[in-house]
Image (cartoon, rainbow, N blue to C red; front, side, top):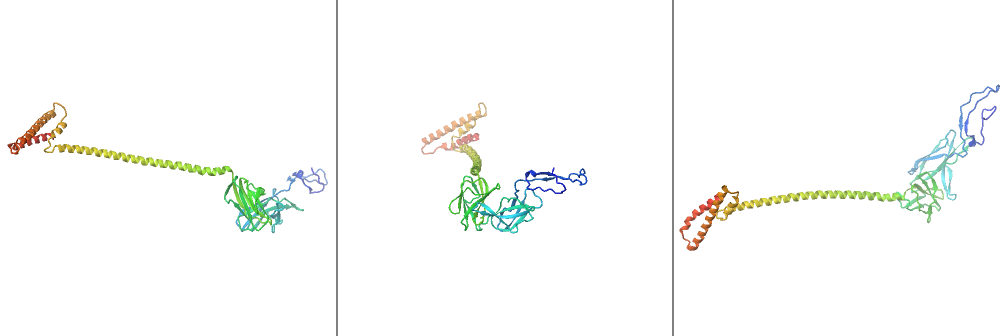
Length: 384
């Protein structure tokens, strides 16, 4: 318990973390030592041995030349009574750090935001806060950068090779350009760490080489000896496995596409082959049917041609077509045919003999030829 007799105010001088805690108070009547008031509500007091550091945010962080930028400064334990101060970070190559220049009308503002109009180039900013009498100030915030891609500023940065993505196994060259004799390359990682590029190996003049790229997204820019900042370049770096994957994925896609194309071609060839085979089979079947039909027609023509008048071998066709068994009408027909055969042969022989015996050709046998012709015609008629 802290006793402060006859006073309604208690002051802590040179506060430290040991003064942190809950505080409350009550009053006592002067006329009576035993009469007191109730305890007041408690108040929590937090005392830090280190100065608080405000957090600065910028919006937008990437801008088009000539755009407006808004700065916001936030104190760790916000409370009333804070004043805010706004600075521009100016590179100091001799000290390998940055100094702070107070922005116009940026001293002791009551608002925790500050607007910069007509931003045209890359720049860094910091803020701090203060309160009390005498005024107590916080530390400066970490610098925040507003990056511009404007290459027409007094200083500029070029990257080689100039591509969207790099790999950890690559090396990159940075070249600072402008009418300045001294340069320094700075970087800001995606994790929020700002530093000067210690791993940038200086080549000749204003050229630098980075042999060991760190995986992730990092912003690089050049700082001149007079405090100018160049345009910023965003470099994205991927691991070696990503490099292999960038070749494997297209290879697998191409391989799968090739296999699908081959399967489609095989399927199409098979369909064409089946269609050709079906056409060939139908053609062969048609040719066989046509040949069979022609053969049948030819046999039929032979049969009918054998039945023409004057064709003596007619008995052979009649004989083969009537062979259906024994003891039936066919047998009678065969007997008749045999008799006709003998008669025809005998008549033919007699005719030849007559021709030899009668060289003049005059004979009454010629009158009997009508009878022979009628017998022959009778035999042909039975054949039908």
